[in-house]
Length: 132
Image 1: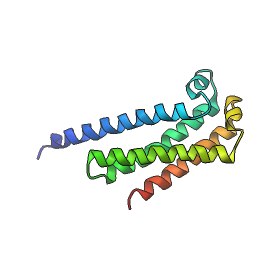
Image 2: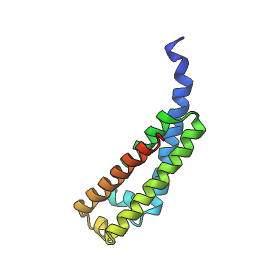
Image 3: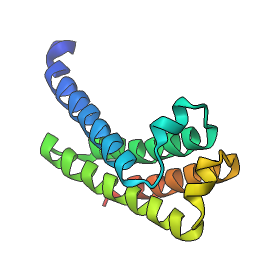
Image 4: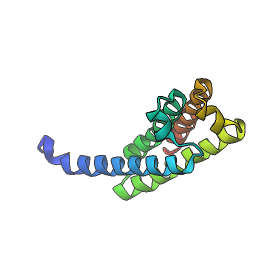
């Protein structure tokens, strides 16, 4: 068996995961109440921190889905579960911090860090739950 015999599967999962990540970014930045990309381009560190936290919080269950899925279709379904969970994490953060839009707009780094932390923590829990 050649080491390259698994290359097609690797490429399928890699491109599938990158497509899921792209979908997550598009959905997430359209559903949040602030314009992450615009804020980041203007140097807003709290928006960058919150977005990177959300990306990490999504990548954790996405990687778990890759490891534990039997098929590419299975991985995509679990990736969608991860996307929904991350958006729910954002909604929970908005409930806990009702002023998050203004805080992120005003570059409140503490709020960006808390938002990122909640995303990563829920992503870790979500990834662990995908085993069962």
